[in-house]
Length: 66
Image (tube, rainbow, N blue to C red):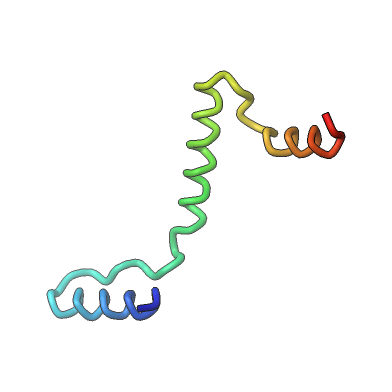
């Protein structure tokens, strides 16, 4: 079953029970990505690592060969 079919089925069931329809697929993707980024930054700080620029720094070290 595709995500669209599941969404339509959930919407139908909600209408049958007089409940609010579920949010459309993908409507919270940006919010979820931001929360994941914030969580990873928090974990980095708690582990004593820099919170930003880690990927760019690692890529730069890898490209320079050291």
